[in-house]
Length: 365
Image 1 (cartoon, rainbow, N blue to C red):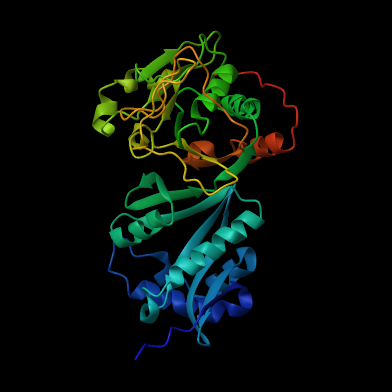
Image 2 (image 1 turned 30 degrees about the vertical axis):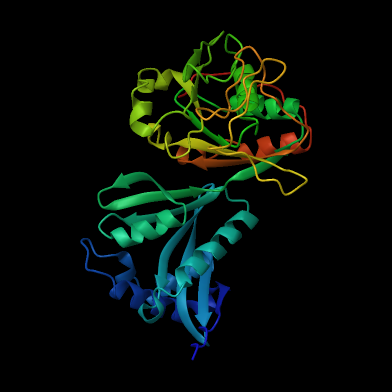
């Protein structure tokens, strides 16, 4: 006999009127955790503290089958919404309550204009840290046993032409500083090199930006006071150790580094980075090209088509082919470096076709 599904979980806004229920579930959850030193403040705070916190900043409460099974408190953390006292009653842990609470909190944060989320987790509770990592939080700092973890919201924008794609690159370049890392992911012909050309234009680097297919890495020196551009093609690299062999760290702090095909390879280069995925919006159901695509022969124009070694192989003097299919860019900021960087405003300027004046470049503080 098939067991009945568990009752649905309802997540609601919590106010000071819910203080007793919230207080009880916090106490139950934190009392069931392994003993740590120093003990968590949640075990010494009284009901009135919880009531005051709810009255000031609010929170969420989760109910299942008529009883309170989870709760959390909100706290303003500048441009981020901080989650505190995230609690699930011991009797229902593992039933999805924590995930429902955190997803509802993310929706609340987006609706209220926050750029992301912040929590503090204890390094001596590895299961808790692992949970937050699964929720896409990254460690951005540590004080003793306390880890500061941040999740910044991704922004998305669609470009319809090669020029729009380059414009997006140019405007993003104005927000980049020496030491920034950009990881590009996208199928064959998605527009990775076209986008990087825009970055190069925005950074005002020397030389034509083309795919570094055969040289793997190419540096474009700055023509002024801005950073240079290091353009890497990681497709043929076997992993992060081979990327280390390129000695990118010797010039990393003075340049903006862009790694095509960098997902799963380049993340360890920097704790703070932009992870950008590019998807072609097709009007049919044909699968997108990907690694391992069938090799093709050189075209009539002499351009080297996709090969088993590298599907993006092109004539180094030619531009990347860019058809009229729209491209969807998902820009995922990782690390506190991107708090207040204006990525959402950048997206709006592209979508609204707004003219934007190039800012005066200043050295980082």
